[in-house]
Image 1 (tube, rainbow, N blue to C red):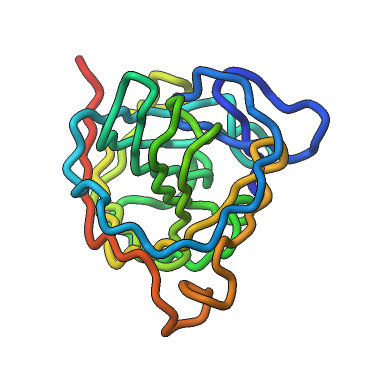
Image 2 (image 1 turned 180 degrees about the horizontal axis):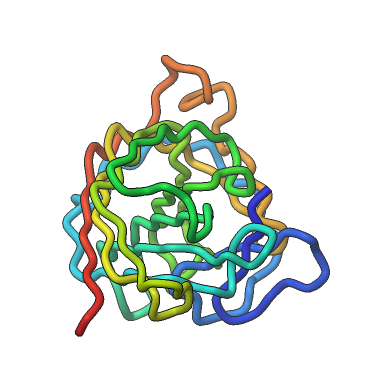
Length: 212
């Protein structure tokens, strides 16, 4: 089970903690279950106005291997943030170059590669988002991955080239104390088993090269 950690504070009372993309606040505690609502029709296109990519050594699976993350901000600032967040918890030794893997998950706590779509968030983190979506199906293709030799620290990520395709996202409520995941529309749309309707955001690619 992946261990999660918010970017500013570990939740010491539990064994599993979470990674909060760009977190600038302490976890706001348990979220109430999300209401089952129609899928949004006004999601901004996946053309980010700003991106953040890096490696956070303060999160990861047992052994503190950290998380490779990429945040694609569709809206940012003034207490209204929407973003696509990619998180890879598999550690520094995972084979990523020229590899493809399927996303099949039903919980943020169980995914080793997680993709979230967070809408209308007052902070640059999971805390308080109006709507949260978790990719339950999809494909991740790593075209290239390079890290500094013998280095796995915050400056160790040198290059990454990734494509996310066929993403299908379910609306969820993620408890920001335990990172347990509850489906908003269990049995109504976007069940884990097709052909229930999911939020389909298509394909998104990103490339990062560390500055010289």
